[in-house]
Image 1 (cartoon, rainbow, N blue to C red):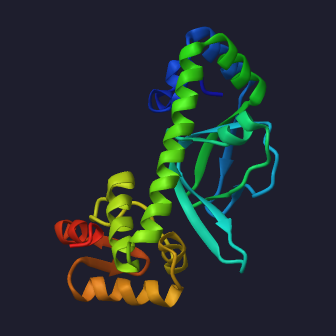
Image 2 (cartoon, helix red, strand yellow):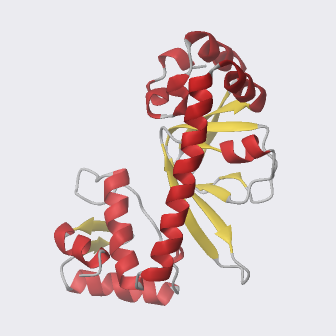
Length: 228
């Protein structure tokens, strides 16, 4: 089992605020979990007894709307934490999380989180900041969904995916989404997402290879995402 004190991932998460004693305690109590692509980490309505610190891999956070269609609200990558809002509020989770790539995560029992919050004021403050940042991002997402056209939202999503996940050795986005997943991110019908991706390809903004996407003209996509 890995040592939390030596884990580089904690430098990119709220865990960076913890001292060696806190990290030693967490390292002794955590479980290392592995998920395959397509595995569900937890589902909407589940009660969590701890948080997940993502070591590697990518997953999506989604919610089913009233007609049963999935809405992807966020992507999670290595260095991010999952489930802390539910643990802090002691309420069931409101979103489902599914692995988009093979993943490895450390599961930290909520007792360890609460003990660290009580003993370490900086960790407590960083946890509050993380929750506030999530609320800001959620507000921005709601605003974009209300104010931007579907085309602008797709351009914005492509820019976000490149900035967040980067590119593979061939220049394609280092995250693969189905057309249904693209549609659930930008809030439109799958047919509309397919049509817009084809239009972006025709206009040489992107290249497509099956499900893989390569950004060819980031400048124009950025302008489009801003309504120009």
